[in-house]
Length: 335
Image 1: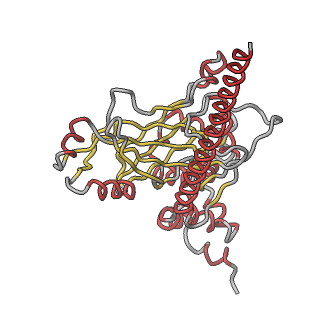
Image 2: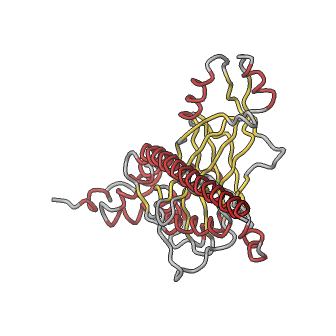
């Protein structure tokens, strides 16, 4: 009986690479490479993984990302293996090297499968050595304050809650963090939105794509997309359709209280995600939302316990103050 290698080699390698392998997604291509030594050689071609990666994440065509990926152990194949699966946080000890300065963000935003925004931005963490970055709340803004992205997304008017649900189900976000020094990358977004709600202060619709970190202290790595404009939401209030713009795309790390963590602690968490385990199991997007909802429940319980402790402390302070007042008043009367 002919071996797999003998059977497959009857086809020209160019036919296999251009007509077969280029039609496969990343996980299938990796599985195909394990079937025979001949296919392994064809499946590890750098150009094949480069085309697959750039088709998956258009933002990585940026020269800064291309240069960073070129230093990875197996180039685009290593980059895809790092960035495609979901990542789990690895608890870091003090023996680890400090977080790398100068991380790169590669962001791609989709609506119903159509790319609506793509950008690469370097995190200016080098300035953290002077003190302000490490001690300030961590936040990476992809859009400039006065910048907005025009889209073909339309608010149809009428049922606002139904539209919010539609946006939550239709938006997809990829946020890849790249460490060019340690030659690692990780997609820290949940891909599918975990929640969508209106910010009653700004009127914008905020869509969250979050990864929950449960190692050590619980935290949320949240990529937030804000949609809308003053004109559009005025029309929404009047139940008339209007064009929706993307006004903000940002990354922040929040603690259990919902407060933005400082730069130093946030970089440690990001480095933990970069070094963490990878998971390609089916249903990870759904489980990401379930973990987020569990985390929200944990936050609610923590807040309720905190409020109970504060009420108890207030009661004790009031009793102590009243007792002290009675004692002093009694002392005055006795004199």
